[in-house]
Image (cartoon, rainbow, N blue to C red; front, side, top):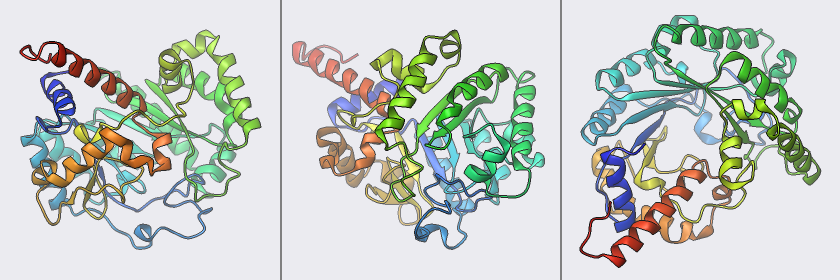
Length: 365
């Protein structure tokens, strides 16, 4: 449901103006990780060369993050998401940061691998939403696909999920729990099992995400058409069951909206730069997590975030996304994480423009 600021962002998208701050700001806090997920863009053992930004342990300075949070508060940002190019809860000031964001009255979402220390549970229960990357329910498979550790981390993740589900019953349903399941050639056969498990345990949302890192061994990706047909067949069979309908998921949302389980074409236009910002480890501000090094609006170590949000450079990026999808230069746009959002925003903008053309003296909304 849209609030007043969402409406201002929408009008701004139609009129090529910035009338409000972003809806959500995402921080990539650290590059430290305790996993080596095979499908990870940053730490996979299958990468031919390690990305330069993970070769040395790095994190965003706490004071710099606080300054951006202060700007977010003044810009009426609604949500802050804490993420990383590694494991978010390994950020050295993680608990302090969660407390600071809560003190400012902003909602907090957390992206984690679920293997956090038990001592952090009280902090994590303060956040509003937790997304846990869990891409297999088989303990042995978990070691090869995700943790790459001899330690029994799978049990830790499962225990933490149970503790979160148990604790939120006393907290009015918080935090909302999403399981992110990265779909590869090695785990697609587990799709029925993950749906059954999500329904049985009471997970709020299941996000099935196709592996999209081109720098990894191609055997992991679902590039083979035969495998793609198998996945479609499995999801098609699932879609006819009550189980599929009872588990909220992105594939169900896509199926209801598009008649397809996964979005293949790029969106008609990109409006994320009116609604989202990502702060990278280097302090760069970008509207896209998939191609952050190509769409840089500014840097928080050189200019206040609020000034970057209203800058000419950010507007240039907004218009490039809206009018020609950045010249169709980026393959990542075909795997857009905000496809449904961009599709619906594009339709809203079209209707607003039609209304204003028909009634130039009337109100937009």
